[in-house]
Length: 351
Image 1 (spheres, rainbow, N blue to C red):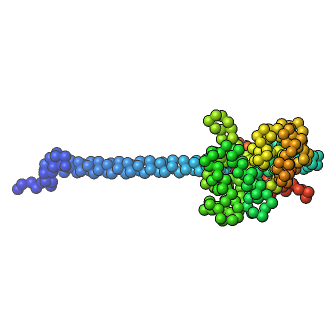
Image 2: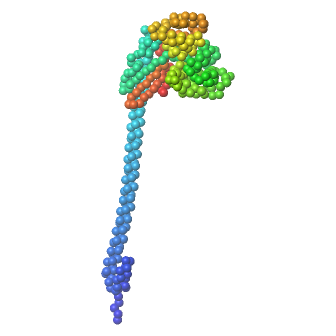
Image 3: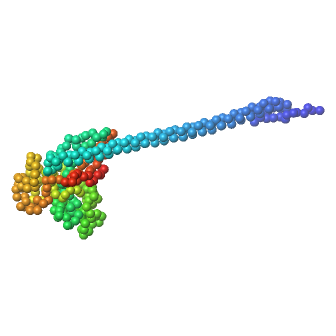
C-alpha cells in the first residue's frame, strides 16, 4: 500500500517547489511570507504616519507664521496709534501756544503786522511737546482775499471781491485763455443765484474749505498750490492768496504783493512793491497811512471806496500745525477768531 502523502506538492509564490512531506518547510515558508507582508503593512503605516507628521508640521509652521504676522501687524498698528496719539495731543497743545501769542499781541499792540509775536514767536518755529516735535506757522486771514464774500449780492464786499478775484487771476499768471471762464466758474460756484453760465455742479453757497476750489472745473492743482514757469518764475496759487475766512477787509501790513494789486486797479506792481518796502521799516497804524507810500498820496482820490476794504487789524488767524514723532507726521489747520470777547477756536481740520 502506498504511503499517503500528508502534503501535496507545493509551489511557492516565488516559484520554489516543495514535494511530499516537506510540510514543515512549506509552513515555515508561508510563515515567512506572512511576516514579510506584515512588515510591508507596517512600513506602509510608517509611511502614512510620516506623511501625516509632515502635514501637521506644515500646518504648525503656517499657524506659527500667521501668529507672527498678526503680532507684527498688531505691533505696527499699536505703534501707529501711539505715534498718532502723541502727535494729536501735541497739536492740541500747540493751540494753547498760538492763543498765548495772539493774546500777548493784542495786549501789547493794537495793530497786526508781519513782525508780531504770532508770526515771529520763538516757540512757534520749533518746540517739543511731550515726545513730539511741533512747528507752527500762523497766517492772518485778512492778508488773503475772502472768496465767500461773493456768496450773496447783498454782501457789502460782493462787488469789490468779484473785481479783485478777476484781477487776481490775471496777476497770478494764469493763461489768458483760462482767465474769463475760470473767473466765472468760481463766481458761479460760490454765489447763491443759479443764473450763471457754469451752474452745473455748482454749490451756490460759501466755501466750506478753501480746498473746495479744486472741485471747480478749471482749478487745477497747479493753479491752487502755485507753480514755477519755464523761465524759473514762481507763481503763487489760490492757496496762498485766497481764503474762506476773514472779515473781507485786507490788512495792508500783512497782505502779499499779489493781493495788494488785486484790491484796486489803482495799485500797480510798482505801488505794491513800494507798500511792502515801506512796511518793512514802518507799520501802517491806520489805513490813511497808505498815502505816505511813494506814488500813493492820492490813492483814495483815484479809488474813493478802497478805504472801506482795507484795515490794519486782523481778526481771524489760521494756524498751520505740524507734529512729528517716530517718523510720522500729523498736519492740522486750526482757525481762531479774536475779538473783544476773547480768542476762540472756530475750526480744526487734520490734513
